[in-house]
Length: 121
Length: 121
DNA sequence: CTAAAATAATACCCTCAAGTAGTATTTGAA
DNA sequence: TTCAAATACTACTTGAGGGTATTATTTTAG
Image (cartoon, rainbow over all chains, first blue to last red; front, side, top):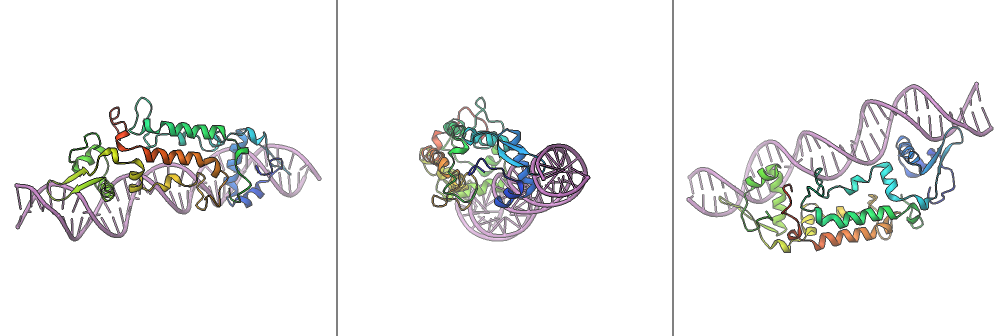
């Protein structure tokens, strides 16, 4: 969609392109529309359109909408209890990585992605 | 073990400390000894000792020995086919992250970890 | 010789996340 | 008023990773 961000896209079409199930796609799209990135138009001749400029959609927001950024920001070793107060052995060594990651996801927007050299998403 | 790296440790003891299964521990330890980080001493009064200074054991080597670094260096979007030649949309945006990650794992050694402020591993 | 240790190989189990499926409902242009 | 679209909710399947279990073998101090 980001390749031609002004078009309206039907679920039907996206399902065919992405080769995922109808229900799954709709669930994701509903998440995204609730988050305000796309607008869903119901009824006949409905579909999905971007609700804002793709240059204003940050990757971190997308991740938050569909799976949650926490997943990527948690303890490297997987300890639930790990925190600044109760660190794991890797905690301090991993800090810069976590920051870099957060920065990447927060600064990049959909418009920064490379849709030209690509056929799979 | 890295807390007192000159001792000899029996599987029995490590299993109790780490609360993981005997077999699982031994599998990991065997991996590590094959990789040359620890030496395993068989027979009665056997156990595991470090085979080299923990300052010379890089995190990347450990990961390689037990699960493979590839896991961490693969495509962010999970595409098997993703590569420099056949990039996914995130490929270029993700490059710096991958490099930072590789750098972190390659530069840090066991000795760099923070064993003092910690009780869980 | 024997007991206590590590090794080896293979099969199994458990959980969780990713994805699928079913079914009923609501929306809105023609 | 009809039809094609999106929504909502719930249940199911599936695959992989992390971990366990079994059983048999090898090693070496005492």
